[in-house]
Length: 358
Image 1: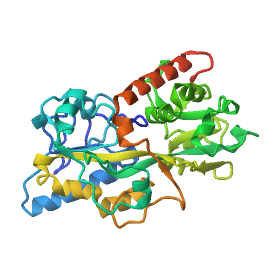
Image 2 (image 1 turned 135 degrees about the horizontal axis):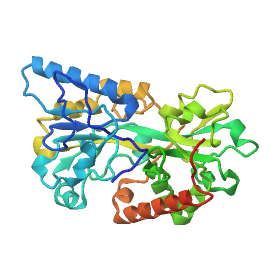
Image 3 (image 1 turned 60 degrees about the vertical axis):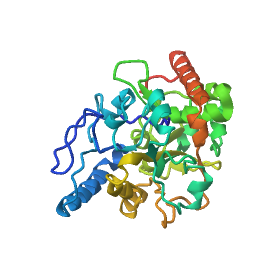
Image 4 (image 1 turned 45 degrees about the vertical axis):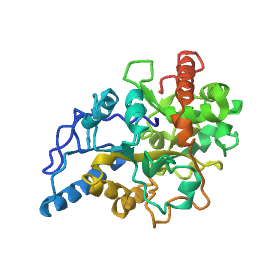
């Protein structure tokens, strides 16, 4: 359904008096949640506070898992194997989700109205204008990870600074465009990479556009590495595609800059969905993720929150770019993505494709 920068969830969770420690299985949870790594501890702490308050008030206990660990196969990788609605989490909070619902489960349960996003009304205009509100109401978006460009001016040299996403396809940027990816040490094939970026290019510019983009990619880096190397001799390219939150961490403003593309930062949703039949049981957690307490944390960390009544944490005049729910759900998008990934692997295997970073 949605794809983004690789986030590897693991099967470890620190002991908690109110959060369940077993994060291996995907079945039977009231709440199963995953957020980007930089947010995990603070989000988990807020959920723990809420669960403690519920316990003191005598409310029924909830079985909640918010895994902290990385590595190995975690519960989100197992969701696609669930066929039975009763085995599915009552509330799912996700920052990933390419295979969150298998096709048969989606057709049988999601498309027939068993799930709802509980999206509050009154979301700020930039989010609405970008089309982030699910018209079918199945998914509720509570925040974004906007993708921007971190420019290393020395590495870019005399080339013009790109201003729009389409600029990244231009031949003058050969060897300059770096986006996020991961692979096991000592291997050549990339295990995970930013498929959301490839999908957006495929939808906007077709397979030829994807091919032109990947020809300009010298290597991939994890998004946490990019701000560490941008502006140094270790920088593999002059243009880094990464979330705004990570781009802002670069400590070399004299030699680097953040470009918010004129046609909009690529807006990757952080989202949730709950089973309608269990809406009351998980209402407090649903309200928490859509609510102001968490929104403050999200905004502080540059994950703009869609909480009603809050001015969006966005640069003045900034636009957002989202392909649209109908586009990402259409079967053709899956085919486009497979073709885009094949083009990427073909480029990576060729002489001009992404190579190991020194």
